Each structure stands twice: as C-alpha cells, then as structure tokens.
Image 1 (cartoon, one colour):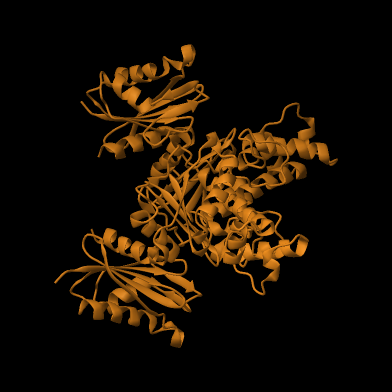
Image 2 (cartoon, rainbow over the protein chains, first blue to last red):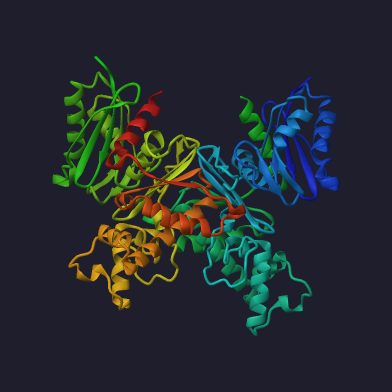
Length: 312
Length: 312
C-alpha cells in the first residue's frame, strides 16, 4: 500500500487535511469542523482519528505537518493559541503520541502557507520569498534559500505588527498604533473606507451600502469610485512601505500577496507595485511581486512540505 | 605542510588578513593598506599576492572568504562599491582566477562580521542572532539557524536604513528621513548631542569641547552629564525600536551590538535594554542582548567561516 505524508491546517472553525504521495502530489483533501469543546481537548484526538481512518492505521503514514493559528516556539511549545482555546501544549508531541510515534512537526499556519506557496504556488522557483497574507489581519512567512524563518518564539513573519503609519490614532490589538495589520487587512481597508466616508463629502457607491466589506471597497474602486479607490490606494501605500522596509532588511527575490484581499488580483498588484517602486530602497533594489496561487490550500501544502523535509 | 583557510576583510583604508587552520583556530593575522590607486585595479592582485606569499603558493590554501564594504549580489556580482572605487566586478571570481582556482567566496563585510560573532564571538551558541554594528553608520547581519541572510541584491541586514523616527527632518544619505543609520551611529549620537546643545540651555561638559565625538557623549553621559545622557538615551530609544521591529519580523534568539559605539559597554546595554523591554512586541516576546566580542577581527573570522563552510 502506498505511504503518505499528511498536511494538516488547524483553523479556528475548520481543520483541513491534505494527503500527499511520496512525490509530493496532493492525492486527497477534505476538512472537518475544529472541535473546540471541553477546552479543545478533543481537537488533537479528532485530527489523529481522521489520519488513522484515512490511512487505515499509522503504518502507512510517513509523517505529518500541522499548521497552528498562533505562535509555535522553537521546540514546538505553544504557550497560547487564542483562536483554538489551547494553552501550554506541544501539539506535535501530543499528536505524535496519539499516532503511535509517527513523526509530527508543527508550525504557525501563516508560515506554513508561505512554505506551500514557495513549494507549489506563487514562488515559481524563487530562492527566497516573503508571503504577505491580507485577511482579517496581516500575517506572513519568510523563506530564505528554501528555509523558513520560524523565529525563536514563533514570531517569524509577524511583520503585520511592525508600525508603518506613525500618525495612526486607533489602537491595534497588539498595543501599538499604525501596524500594517490595522491597515492593509480586510478589516483595515473597510476602516479606511469608513473614515473617508465620514471625512469626505463626495459621492460614492459605498454610501448606499448598509455594511461594507473589503470586497465592496475593491469592487467599487475597480469600477471607478474615487473614494473607494483613494481608500484602497492609501492602504496599499502602507503595504508598499512595509515591503520597502523588508527589502532593506531581508532583500527577498519576490513578495507574494495572499489572503482574501489578494482576490483583488492585478488591480492590487498594480496599486502596491506603484507605491513600492516609488519608495526609496538601498541602491534602488526592488523585489518582484506576485499573487499567491494556492488559495486556502496553501496551508496543507506547506504543512506537508514541512513533514516531507523533516523526515529525510 | 599545514593547509589554511584565509579570512580577508577589505576596508576602505586597510585590508585585514586572518589565517585559520583546519580546526578554525586563528593562527596569524596582519593588515596592509588597501591599494585604491588606478581605479583599485591593484587591490585584488595585492590580496592574492599576500595570500600566496604567506602560504608559499596556493597549494596550501584550502579556501578564501572575502568581506567587501558594499552589497554583494547573489552570484557574487558587485555593481558598485563606493568605498573601494570598485564597480561591476565579481571579486570572488577575479580572486579565484588570480589564485589559480582556489575557491573564493565574497560577501558584505557587515554580514561577515555577524558570521564571525556567531561563530566565535558574542553569539555564544545562539541558533539565531542579529548583529547591529554602530559605527560611522549602522550596519548589520542576520543569521538564522546558522545561515546568513545575504539578500538577493546583497541588502540582507541593511536595517540601518529602515525608518524609525518619522519626525526626522534631516535627510539620510539613502534618501529617506529618520533611518536608524542617522540616529544610533556615532555620527547620529554626535548630531543628537549637538541639536540638544542648541535647543537646551542647561550646563553640559560638552559645551566646553571644540569638536564632539560619540565617545565624548558617552563618557559625559556615564559621568552624569544630563544633556549627554538625554541625547544618548534618545538615540538608544530608536535602536530599541528597531530591535522591536526586528523581533516582530525575525524573532532572533539574541541581538549583538558591535561597532565603535559598542565600546560604551554595559551602559549602552542597560540603556537600550530598558527601551527595548518597554516597547510592545507580540506576546511580549523579547530576545537577549549582548555585546560583540571580536572587535575589528569579526570580519576575518566571518570570512574564514564562510570559506570553511563553502568547501565542505
């Protein structure tokens, strides 16, 4: 019977499973609700049960990679993972024990997504890339010469909480003001649009909407709505600024933009590229910019890649 | 006869040579003036000649690492190196040709210093470290899991040109305003002290000096001079801010402070640690902070380490 690598992406609401063969081809995928009842005590057992069920035991499981929506420290310890209600746990070790010693490796989910895009997505053969995910917040992952930068305490790629707008007066939930997370995320784009609607008087299709989503802002901007375009442009300016800072620190070959906001596609790329190219970097050095390609599957790809690399 | 690795650190005025045995022990070191005459055309030949002279030919040269005071691109190309007057050159290849095929590896000098400190200096067994050198400017190097982040265009570790003071009105030579390079360098400390002398009226020993050096500011601050202490404290605040940004991006195990300003020793560490610890980072995560230990030899150590690692 064929042996498999498993890539698992544990999210706050759903847990995704990907089954990869020895060549790294995704042969199956599915998801189950993330069981957070009883202090999430059933969560890892339910993950182990799914893997055992699929593989008819653990004999045919080569290794398992797991993405966790929180910081995973060097050594695998998770002090707290708010989205799952987990605290003081080593998920890789617990899962390995549940799977009778199968090698299990855990890392932050945004890092896993970066590894997935590097391996089979927008990375496209780059030696080094930085994935920036624009979702509810801004996450990311940094891969240099094929190796992930996880960070000693699991904060590798958390540049969403580097301040890019020193004039911001609304607090970020991290305690700072003006983090990229507050601005270039879906949440941030909506906030910027709302602020502009309050400050400006010009017409906008957004004024007719009862609730506004980031997608509404992007769609209106694309359709020529000046206010929506101005709000989106401002958010993308700060994304470009963050990329210039990262260029002067890590100088990656390419940036990959992912997350829900990246569905704005070429419009987003054009907007952020214009700002990034205009911002000063040392020696005028600029990285390429591309879109993520794996969508919600990036996490299971990355987790499987981590699993594959760690047992060779 | 014993075989050697050579670590070479080419600076604007002097070129340092370090000879390391197969175990990585420094067995000899010296320096010669950097020959920049005739468009620096004699520079690399003079480096090759020194190595051949010491080793009585190239038979006993295992490999050579070279630190260059400018960005070295992936592949070894140097577009321009202002301090040496070099342009459009691949120093590693040219030197290898001059040395009859001995393997030669070149990288930025600040990156080499970081590798040196990681290997035999202040790194002290850390898996990952960021060296921040406070000299005429602010340079640095990033090592994660034992591997240097050079950057595609050679800009790895150039966080000296990330803006930390958005209120700065004096331009940095990179075209931005408020770079760490302008503030926490020896030049920046003197500038801050001069500005405070102009803005404030209180007594200060600095007022009696005709020219002020960063060392004067530090010495006065240590001796209790309130104005000097305030100037130095402000500069170190921005260094701490930069370290908080790097923690939220790379999350290193330790920061190492080097360069001429680091001679301020524990006083510098105490000052920057106070600011760094007070600044928000995700989950309150903080790295250790230590002093560089190899002084001006860090570059030859790092270059030799690069040479050793690259031929194994």
